[in-house]
Length: 545
Image (cartoon, rainbow, N blue to C red):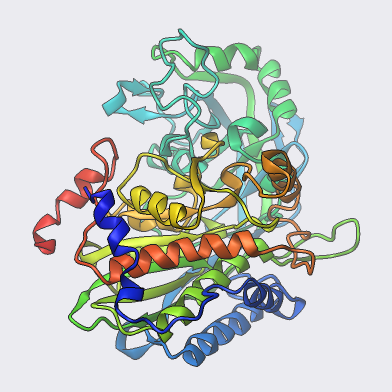
């Protein structure tokens, strides 16, 4: 545990050490200018494996070079290869129990298998509730059901998400706070582990944390690492809520009643009687090598100990035209703004005296496709997890001006939260725990790839709740959040000259301050006793003595 008094004194270390840094450390204007470039049509939406990636990588490396950083990859490289498979479903037929399903309206499907066609005929469907196998919580939705060759149908989120007070399941998975069991990635992986041929999740906006338009945004496109570490289902995707209700009714089941039944520990999988699930969809696939970008400022006396800052450079590329005919999904806020924030921190750090510990600046590929770039790094780290002090991640910042608070994602995980509180106080601000824990944001950003290897992490992600804006308070903050969510993963997530990035700059400076403190210290932030990552970190404790 890090003592608050120690944090407070250490946060001033860069100044005590005579760091030559400008008065306005993080410039809102420079953040805006960088986003304007990255989100421009010339970059084509920054999809991995496209010409837009090449332009993005070249531009990012040029920025690091200009700032005076060194290559952070192996053998003096600026990048780390991430071999990928890109798949695209074409137009075909899909049906459930004989009733046709329209791709994009009733169902959303994709595949990560490199096959010519995704085909299945009359595959039996089985409703597996929330699809959770959690022995440590005394919960098993599967009860030994054989899923080989079948289609597993799941509910989104955790078994206690909709539970009322007094229900036995209430609080078993954190109530409204999503655990990893609630994430779609876990459900698809669990279906594959159990031999299912396909996996479908029933969509509802509260449980998923986003609307149907976000589900369909990839337009049948998907990515995976070239050599996945575990099996994959042939088809994965979502059922639109009303379509799912009709599908259950055709099998003689009431979906609303099944939702209630799935909240009990004695729930057993239910076959969806009928003609089964059928699909015949053409698949095109290509192989490409995408790249993470890594830059560093080597440490002076403890160079093997690493403080890492991260964001993802990728967005969704081109898709179907919107009402205005726009096809490019530029990802201006998600996450060109976070990328600009990492560049800003790097520029400030490069002007300061070298720190005892090494500072690494990581810009990941493939986040939008399932954290593929950061996961590739975490599975084959350039800098060992045991000696990585912390990972500080930026992924979506608010663009509506100064705020009285900063949103904390994953409240109660580790001691970096104490450092955030101290840094926020120095700015005259407070920390507000995420207001929308059901979105499971702690499991949805690139920091999670290293967190699951034991590295303490801190994530700033503005869609975790409405900020308390200096002008307009939380009401204005909610208006900003609602407006942004309508553009999340859409063509309208675009740069705007009307953005007020003073609040975003302040958030970036929080991570800069925390990172500088750690890089100038010998502290090792710890996970809380209640964190699922504490035991993982403890296994490498001897490396940090």
